[in-house]
Length: 103
Length: 516
Image 1: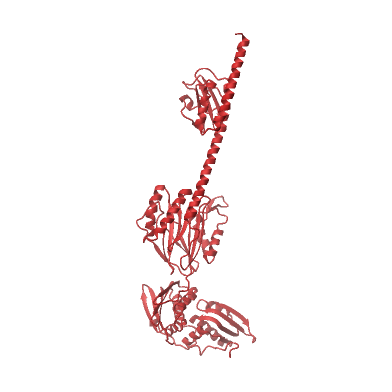
Image 2 (image 1 turned 90 degrees about the vertical axis):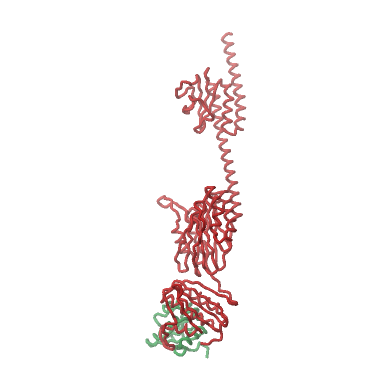
């Protein structure tokens, strides 16, 4: 999995993930996002597969952001990510926002 | 006659003798040039007897008398210079004796009546010098002939070897292969061959034509032996008696590799097969039988094993581990099996890149024997789209690094389902559970096509875990875990579990047209 971080116009961090977000890749993601930026957006448009470990990582980032008063969002959901969110009922809970340029 | 006439007659006689000696010596040179051995030189000395007024002669060369000699002469020590007296005493010693040394021996003349004069000594010395030069020439000629024969034998052995030993090996299905076959200065008996799914590396003892011919027999026998159920017995039946009667040995290791990564092998006294697992650890598969030419068995059962994607197998000859050099303490040091394992453990990822690593490790070492190396890596291709009632299997080590390979296998095998992502996700969840919580070491994924869909089975050798008996956590809850079982159950139309030979076996049914 590739992880590309860059600052966004609002002063936060935009992180583009590409590839698989599974149990093998989650430790890397956690290391890259520690400490958690106050404002973090994960662009998942390049994520081709996510399992419950990856999902747990997203939930963990969201919960920590809420605890620290930060801001966390995700966008660019592909079929694989939508699938697991529907199976687990988290599609209505996680902070999903439209991808840039998408109405 | 008066004194002057006596003196003149004596001078004329001496001149005649000198003339006779000159003529003899001229002829002697010609005969020496054409001499084939020491026997010809002894005959030359015997022909000089009349000229010297001697009754007997003998030739001593390199510590041995040529032919038989009288008892009084047998133990006589070689003189250091021309001598007219014997060093030892013997009751049967002749009245007159003349001994002349040369570089590698000496000549002796004797007579029971009369004496030897200084002129006889000079002739004897000339003959000794001629004999010495001739012996040098004979030995030079023999050495040159021997070298010519050896060179011819080496060239012939090399031609035989190149004819019977293939230069390149073809890789079995789902394997990548790299190999090296490098004969020593003198062609020996190393060989490698791939036939009918078997990859074989062998080493026949000895050098030259004999080793090359046995190598040819070996390779020919292998092509027939693969047809037999007991390949080792088939080879031993043909080659063991031949090797034993020739006083030669042969070691051989043979591996048959299947497209699904399983393999069987036998090893007759050869250096151990090394397997480098994808995680980096090295396993050693040692001999299963003694070398051919020592003891023959009635049967040669094979041992079995399993390669997982990325695992690399290394077959090699003892030219590698017996490469040598002098240590800083001037002691002979061998490359050794430990260094072979260490080099393999740190070699590059693929056979093509790892082979140069292995050869470069030998820089500074003398490879005194033939060198053969074969690297095989299990690289299963994506399975062909299943047609009909086919069954696809994938064996994997229980490692999260294999999740991508597992997911690709399941997705491709279930490609014609409405959502192939569902079985991929469910199997991944089960695999992670087995790895993280079950302590599994091996995984087996099986996909069977059934009417209307696919049966997907994941088996693992971890602790018993029955997903049908576990309590499922609720959906829609923001928690950092506990979704796996929920995902598995919701993704499949049916879920079944059984415990089979210390393995968990979880079967999921996916049907076309089914919804979540």
